Image 1 (spheres, helix red, strand yellow):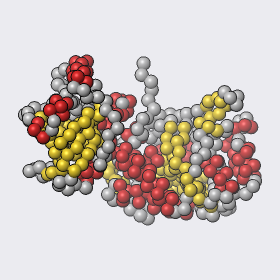
Image 2 (image 1 turned 135 degrees about the horizontal axis):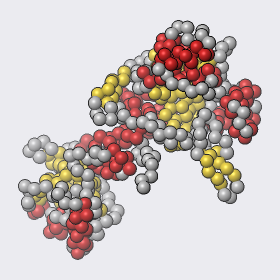
Image 3 (image 1 turned 90 degrees about the vertical axis):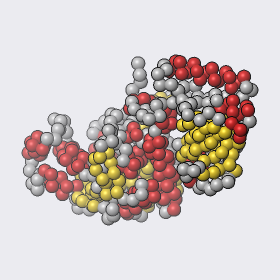
Image 4 (image 1 turned 180 degrees about the vertical axis):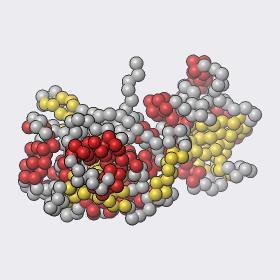
Amino acid sequence: MSDQTDTPQSTEAELIAIRRDKLTKLRELGIDPFGGKYETTTTPGALKANFSDEQKVTIAGRLTAIRDMGKSVFATLGDVEGRIQIYLNQKGVSETDWAAYKLLDLGDWIGVEGETFTTGKGEPSVKVEKLTVLSKSLRPMPDKWHGVADREIKYRKRHLDLMSNEESAKIFLTRSQMIAEVRNFLHERGYLEVETPMLQSVAGGAAARPFETYHNALGMDLTLRIAPELFLKRLLVGGFTKVFELNRNFRNEGISRRHNPEFTMLEAYQAFADFETMADMVEEMTCHLAEKFCGGLEINHTDEEGNPLRTINLQRPWKRANYHDLIKEVAGDDFFDITPEARRAKCSELGVQISEGMEDYEVVQQVFEKKVEEHTFDPCFVTRVASELIPLAKVTPGGKTVEVYELIINGQEISPGYSELNDPDVQRQRLEHQAGGEEEQEIDHDFIETLENGMPPAGGIGIGIDRLIMMLTGAPTIRDVVLFPLLKKKD
C-alpha cells in the first residue's frame, strides 16, 4: 500500500516538473486538465451530513488525501464546507478514467459519479463509476500534517491556509454564516438594508484619519469613509425609521492584533428608540449567534500558540455599569474629585502612560482603556461616558455625560450605541469643538443642514464585525478572521 503524494525529499521545482509532466500526459489521453462546466447533485459536505446508502450522486471537490492499494484506492474529496471518502476500483471505471486517476495528485480538483455505501469500518463513501478531471494543480499542497505553520505565509497566501487547515476554513465559513444571520436577525425586526457612499467629500461619523484620494473627472479631493453614520442619519431625516448597513470602513491608522486598516462594520438606526433599546438588541443578537454557531454561551479562548487563556461567559443579563464608577474601582473613589494635575500624577502610580498634550478627559479615557477595558472579558455595557468623547450622542439631562453604551467583551470594545443627537444647533457646536480649530471644510455642514429638516429621536449602534467574530470563534488575532488582511509589501 502506498500514498500517491508528493515526495517530501524533492525540491519544489522537482515536484512542479513532475506535475507538469502529468499535465502533458493527461492531454495525450485526450483529457482537458482544466475541465469546464460540471453538473453536481450535491456537495461533499452536504452528502456526508445527509448520508444514506445506495444514492446515485455526482459530486466535485479537491483531492486532499489518497491511499493507493494498487488496483483500488480510497481518497478524500472536499471543499471548505466538508469532505467525504471516495473509492475507486480499476475494474469499476473505464481504462481512460483509471489512467487519468494515475496522473492525479493531492490538490487536484475532480468530479465523480457513483453510488454511496458505508465501509466495513462505518465510513460514508462513494464508489466511483466515472471520474472527470476538473483542474490539475501544478504546485504541491502544504504538508498534510502541519499545514501552513508560517503565520506570514498563512496570511499572504490564504488559499494555502484554507486548503490545508480545516480549523481556519471553519472560521471563515462560520463568519459568512454569522453575517448572513445578522442580516436575517435585523430583517425579521423590520430593518431595511441600505448602501451609502464609500467615497466621501468629508470623512465624518468618527474621529479617525482617513485614506485620501482624488477624483479626476470632478477635480475634487475625496476620502474613503471612516464610518457611514452621517449618511444613515440622513435617511432617518428622509423618513426611514429602521435602517442598517453592513459595510467596509477604512482608517489610515495602525495595524495590530485588533486593528486592520479596512474592516467590516454594522451600523443600525431605529427611530423613536434610545441607547438602552439598542443595547438590548445587541445583547439578544450576540447571544443568538453564540447559541446558533458556537454551541452555547461559553466561548473558550486561546493565545496564538493555542494555549488556553480564558472562557468568556455570555449568559444574560449582561452587566451594565457607569463609566465613572468603573474608573473609581481601579483609580480610587476620589479620582474625579482631585485636580487634573493630580489625576496625571495618579496615572504614573497606576502605570498608565499619558502624553503632555492630552486634555483631562483624554487622560481619564486612557485610564479607562488600560485599567478597565483591557481587563474586562465577560460582557459589560459601559454607560454614561464623558460627552467630549462622543460628539454625536445626546447629553444626559442635567449632566456632562452622554446617553451611550460601550460594549466591552474580551478586553476590547465590540459595539458602541447611542441615543442619537438630533438637535442641529448642539450638533454644530459639538462638531466644531471636535474639529479643534481645523479648517472649516473639516465639518460636514451639509449634515448639519440636513438635521435642520428634522431627525426623529433615535437609537443607533455600531458593531465591529471582525472583533465580534474574533470573540465568538476564539480567534486570537483579527488576521485570523479577515480573509486577506493588509500586510506590508514584500521587497
